[in-house]
Image 1 (cartoon, rainbow, N blue to C red):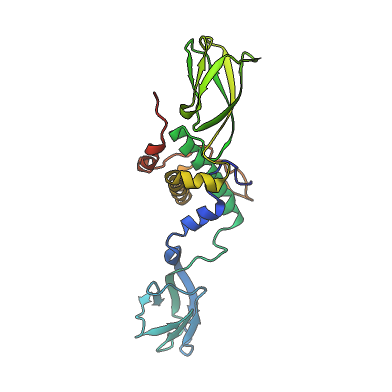
Image 2: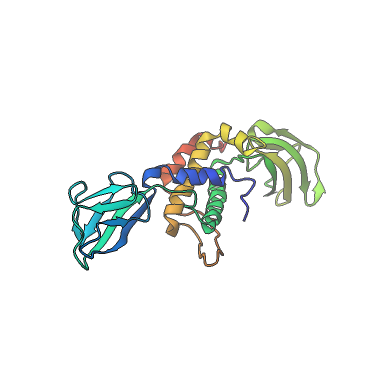
Length: 264
């Protein structure tokens, strides 16, 4: 899956956001270093611990750094060699590397970015990255028709019951179309128009920073709480949907309120 053209943030931006606290981004609960033989004093960890995060145990007894052992990079040196057959384990944090995210993570993140962007656009009534929109309305016998996405840059065409319509006026600044008579009751009206803040992702990001923050926060929240997202099932990298995002804390949407289109 390629990142959607409408997605407000890039895969790299999402990955970087998920590493807000790089020093504590990954954690080892229990790494087995081996067993004592009464002679060997040095043992190597698989990773270099973040300073102050290492907890080292011999036979389930917590060891004291600079008293029972010292550490250099990822090598442990005991003051006294661990007793024969006593197990040695460690827990610690370590910094995320470039390979922290695997290919299935990329697929998940792209799906979440697209879904979070859609959630933000639906909530605000906006289109962030400029694109062509085709939408269908049903006539209500009134003169005013409100488009679903703003800001509108151009109305490309309108059909009513498959016939082209030209007798209308427009106020693009508020996303309204006005029929010179009325929009005919119960007729299918198809409108094609362009909407969005900028033609490029970077251009749109500069104009809607609150929406960028929301999308990043929503992606991070759903990534860490994937039980709240709809559909996952990655076995051989398949079936990730996330067309709907559920369980996003309501407080997150507050930062989008300044972008919401007026209902009037």
